Amino acid sequence: MIENDATGPAVESSDVSELIAALSAVPDAHQRSHALAERLKELDDGAVLEAIRIIYEKTLTGNRDFALLYNGLILSGALVRGLGSEKMSRLVHRAQEAGDFEIVSILLDLPSEHPTESGFRSSAGPDLRDIPLGVRKALARKPDFRSIERLARDPDPRVIHNLLKNPKLTERLVIGIAAARPSNGDVLEEIYNHPKWIARYDVKKTLVMNPHTPLSIALKLLVFMKLPDLEEILEVPNLPEQVKSEARKIVGKKTAYGLDNHAD
Image (tube, rainbow, N blue to C red; front, side, top):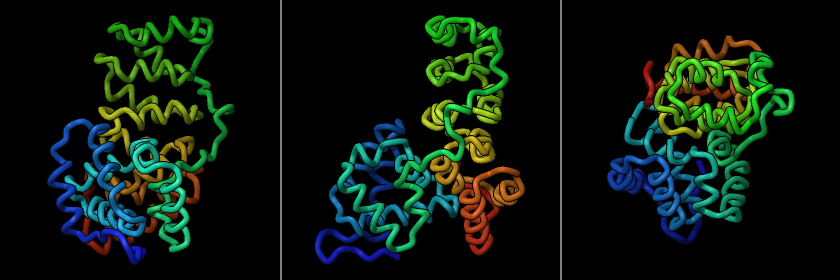
């Protein structure tokens, strides 16, 4: 466990519970993330790490209110924007020294195991590649389901960014995008950063199970997985060993807690 600094405000479970009361009612994920970072900015480094630890552990037990704060923690770039790069570097270094690698995985955006340049999906046929990017981006906004189905195979994250905002897009197609192999890691990151789609459990699970998902994203999403799905993840071929190792740890914790469910 990481100790608090000798000076500066400490943090207790009750303090984090106050954060829950203040922030869990904020409906927008980005606003909630910003507000959480502003609160954490007021704490010393040890207290920030302990607050993150409490949020992580409570989310692991299936507490949905704490899961809302955890979602704020893992939103790409949210903490570094709120806390600043200097403080973030200190936090990462301190967590690494303490061997608190669950916290390190929350703080860091780790590189993908699969280079982006080799990640374009083979399912993107010439019918897409021959259409100019600007046209594909425009089509991704249109409510035409046939175009949506075709563009779900597009390897360009800018097209997928627009497609994910299309109100006619279905969860089935999003899961198809998340499951595609090989895949561009930037495309999978677009799904992760979309508040509507990443809120869906099956989308989270599909991202975790795709070996091409950036490592930092897979590690951050593991905490949400049901126990049977964690055990399934351990059997998925070609997943990075870091993902399987963390999955084994969470299986042990959920088993000890007597849990078989999750926090969406």
